[in-house]
Image 1 (spheres, rainbow, N blue to C red):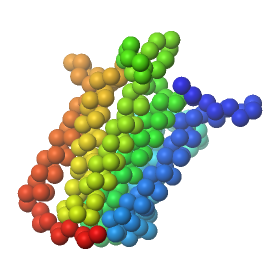
Image 2: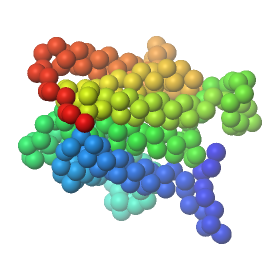
Image 3: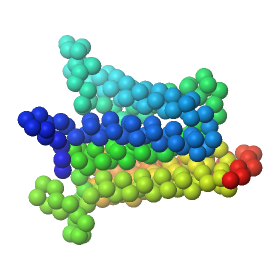
Length: 251
């Protein structure tokens, strides 16, 4: 839709700019979430920054290792350019590891940390969808609905906009789950938010035209979304049944 922003004779790629703004917004959201949950905002912000940087570095290193033949004679290419060449799976694994070990180092309760990180993670995913919408390769299935957008000369579902709406709905769920009268179980806000977002992506992915498929024709992202949604709901049920419940914070 808008892969480049032209300033005079110079064109700046849109997606990296959106990612930079998204990183800043996500860290800001985590800071506000920590304050809302009455946590040490400085510590949580530092953890979020470490998670973000680890995810970025991990995504790049994983991509380099998977495509080492393209870098073994050009080591400088590992560091530049950085506007393409990342592994989402590697980024998630490195980010998760950084969150876990940082929380252990600071002796933080992991479920409390996840409650504070949840809106930041969703905000990052929203900006990822926005970057894909403006300058990415993703596009939706053909449609004749009035809100379809024109891509490649035909009307298509704006799947990235659907993803953004799912993200906003998930943030709304987090906000409701962290109301003082509902703040009775650590991890509940994170698990509810995760389940809603994964369930939304499970539905939205059906409208994507260039989805990843398994050899038997199943949507890879739908499978992942279903597993995450089911796992979140099972963990929520387990924690609600067997974990001690904190008294609700008075407003």
